[in-house]
Amino acid sequence: AQKVTQAQTEISVVEKEDVTLDCVYETRDTTYYLFWYKQPPSGELVFLIRRNSFDEQNEISGRYSWNFQKSTSSFNFTITASQVVDSAVYFCAYQTGANNLFFGTGTRLTVIP
Amino acid sequence: DAGVTQSPTHLIKTRGQQVTLRCSPKSGHDTVSWYQQALGQGPQFIFQYYEEEERQRGNFPDRFSGHQFPNYSSELNVNALLLGDSALYLCASSFRAMSSGANVLTFGAGSRLTVL
Image (tube, rainbow over all chains, first blue to last red; front, top):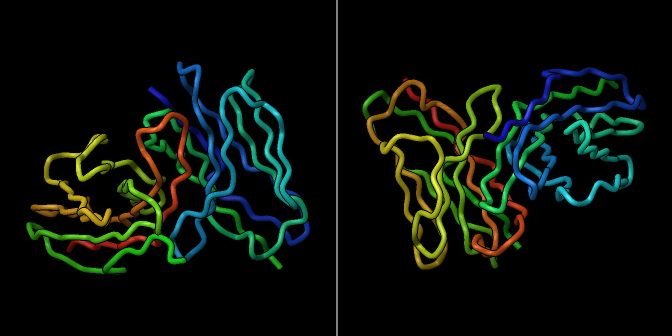
């Protein structure tokens, strides 16, 4: 069965520091998709990125970057120069073609001004 | 363009009661999925509706049921409520669930259910 592990339950950083959120997954599928979602206090999950299993290119979007390594089954997320608005719970998720997402338990990030 | 809207936002029920939660998908989306998020946990998949039929189901008992209407909106019903059903219930919509590849889900803000 698929499994997503986010070992960091809570992280606190001071504003402008860089922070990396870890995600490790287990699967026997050859085709799959990995996601990161942000959940602010309002509750709704906000989509950040999707990666398929055949695309290991790292991606950068502004202050956000993602490192996908199949060799270590990891899909880590880095926020550069963190801001208070980045405070939220971040979820890593796994999806097969069946379209139901398997979520990790989330990492609560607090950015201290 | 409205995203996914859910109602009610908060509700309180007692054990044994029944509850109905409602979801309107994002404009242009035809598939609705429901997730349960207990406090401090990640969302867990309940079921998915497409073309007014339940297409996939997670590991939830039959007390959890749903419906999708011709306008793609959906309801989640939970019967015989237990204390453990207290959670944030999230609705997510997407387009063409049966297509290949992974569709990005758009989530609503959820309905927070408290069972006393």
